Length: 232
Image 1 (cartoon, rainbow, N blue to C red):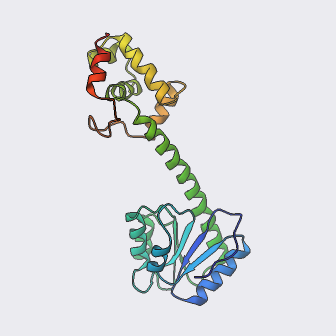
Image 2 (tube, rainbow, N blue to C red; image 1 turned 90 degrees about the vertical axis):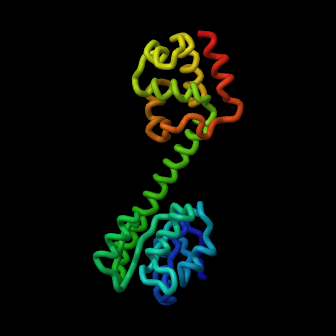
């Protein structure tokens, strides 16, 4: 494996091809654009060296010895990798390109590679990866906050987002509007939502439609909820 000097750009770029000359050419070319590159002769070598959660982008030949590029793409998904993939090939076809793109590939380029097209695809791939990484981080953060809610608070939050008034929520849940207001205030505090708009945006990133009791936070049993609701 060869590695270029560290880059100021997001990366690194993982290049997988069974032809050493192709690896060297792409590494040198991308290096002139400021990308740090790591090269591998097979998909298996790459998977053994790069753990899930690694940032960057994959540029891989579709036709590799052993595990193919499309098999690699499936393996990345199965192992929890979120790296964007750009495919290159000297023997591609329309069916293969469509399958790759449907599976999430950023691009499918034919050899000999047009440097400008590859750099443009790489820029788009890293931008997409950065945006998706930020979104995943935000969703994970909100999911952690959600786990702090009791089952009753989740029910109230779901109904608030659907637009029900405190009185209507109380009727549905069999508690008083005053108790609903108590739960609602607790939800806003735990979810760190400044207003209803914040809460609605939160609902677009996390799934509130879970089975009752799923991933229930410790110490938030029905007894605590029942005790609180007795104050209605």
